[in-house]
Amino acid sequence: MSGLRFGLSGCGGGLESAPPEQLVELAQLAQQLGFEALWLNEEHFQSPRAGHGRLCLSPVVLAATLAAHTSRLRLGFSVLILPLYQPLRLAEEIATWMFYRAGASTSASRAAEPAVTTSARSASIRAYARTRSTMP
Image (cartoon, rainbow, N blue to C red; front, top):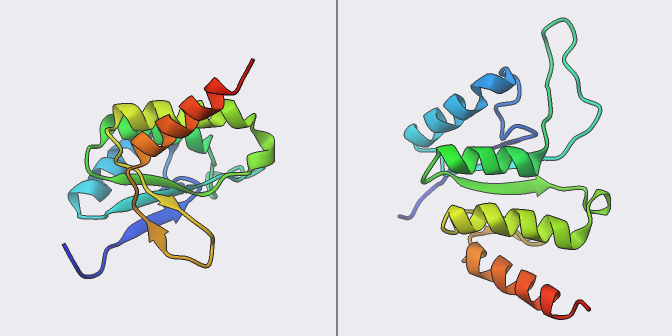
């Protein structure tokens, strides 16, 4: 398919103004409406005030949840604050949901380059396997 492709971005994939219990339903609706991707941001210290504002959930856990409830919607991270994670653990968690999702994920290389779709499942699993083989 060529032409323009549209995705949503934000700490809830652009859906963060909705209550958390509605995120799965809204992601499914975004998929039905033809959106290609949801890009999740990691943000901290965001809390709704008086029922208005955003509630930012863990992007890795949210991605796993959305992956379990959608089939074509690509999921990616526009912001992950890497120093907050143990690198091997993060790679393992992302590789796990990508494995079960059969690689329907999107990753971005440098900020100046366009988003690229990869065979993310196999690439992540290979990277994880290389890391595991070098550990004592």
